[in-house]
Length: 279
Image 1: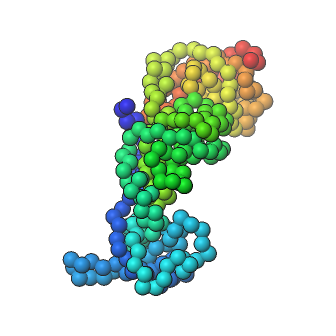
Image 2: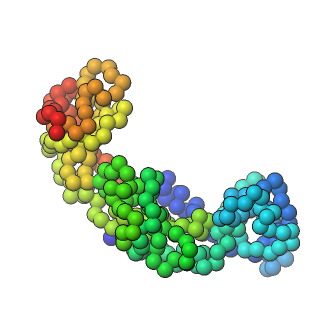
Image 3: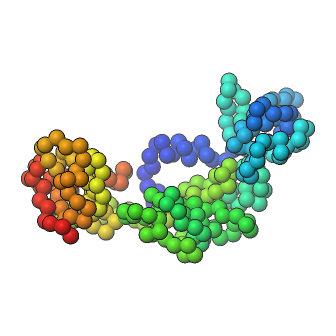
C-alpha cells in the first residue's frame, strides 16, 4: 500500500528510535545507578568514556546495575546518542537477548507480518508475532493503529487469540518490541469521503468533548462540530445542548486527508444546527 503522510514529530521520534551501531565496551564502574564504560577505537588507538543510563541497563527489573555487571566485564551495547557535553550514551538492554535483537533487526518499515493477539488492554494490544523467540511477546498495537473507526476500548476491535495481519511501523531493539498497525493495511475511508465537502449529512453524536461534538457521518468516518457552531450563547461545554446518540444534521466543511480530520459546520449558522431527535 502507498505510505500515508506522517506527522513530522512522529517521524522525528521514529528516527531517534532506529537501532544504532553496537560497540564492545568494558565496565569501569558506576555513577549512581548509571554504568560507566570504556570504548576502544582500534583504528585510532583511542579510548572514550561512555555511559549506560540505568533504564538502559537491562530489560529485567533490578535494584542496581551492579547486580548485572562487574567492573572489568566486557559487554555489547548499542549507541543511543550523545548528551552531557558530547558524552556517548549506550543501551545494554538492546543487546541483552541476541536472538531477540536479530529478530527485530530483520523487520523493515512497511513490512506485513502475521501474529496472534496475546492480550488486550485499554492502552493497546500485545501480539505474538510469528517467528519471535520462545517466551517473548514482541508485537504491540497502539489504540489509534487498530482501526480507522471510533472505538471506546480495543476489545471492540480485536480479542485475545485472534490471528491478525499488521504493518510494521518500527522495530525497537531498546524496548524489544515491534510497533504494528492493523489499520495501515486498509484504505483510509476519508479518501473516498473527500468529495463530500459541501454536503449536508445526518448522523448520531458519538462523543461529546468540552469544546464540541463528534458526529458519525459514514462507516469509520466521523466529523467534528465545534461548540461555537452549536450556539451563540456563552457555554462552557455542549453537554446540555446535545446528547450522545442524538441525530444531528450538519454540513461537511473540510476533509483534511493529511491530518485525517473532518470539520463540520452548523446548518443555517450558529444556533441553527438541525437535530432530528434522539436515536
